[in-house]
Amino acid sequence: MDDKITIIEGPPPTFESVDDGWAVGLTECPSLYDMAVTRLRTFNGPALVERCHKAWTSQGAMFLHYKNPLGLEERSPIMAARCVESNDGHVLLLWIRRIPEESETQFDPDDDDSNEI
Image 1 (cartoon, rainbow, N blue to C red):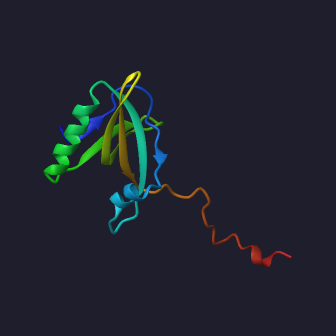
Image 2: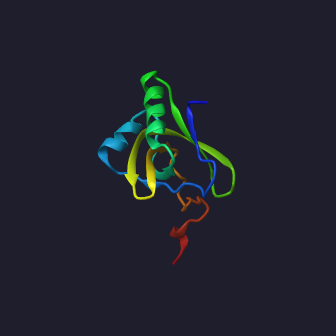
C-alpha cells in the first residue's frame, strides 16, 4: 500500500514533457521511455515525498495511480518527487516515466507515391 500515490478525486492529471538533462537521465535503461512532470495539489505533500524517499532508499518503486481521460485506471512509475508551498497549500511535483506515445502519422507500405506523375 505504501508503494503508490493515488489520485482519488478530480480530473485526470496533465503531463508535461520534460527535456531537462537531469530528468532525462533518470530513464537511462535498455528500453525507451519518456519523462513527464505533473503537478498535484495535496493536503500533506512532505509526507508523500517522504514515502517516495523511503521506498527508493529500500530499493523499491513508487507509482502514481490515476484514471485516464477514458476513466480507465493507469499507473506510472514515479522517478522523482518534490513538494512546494503555494498560496493554496502544498503542490506535489512528480516526475514520472511513461512509454512513448505512438506517432500520429503511421507508415502505410501500400501508399506508394512514386508511381504518381
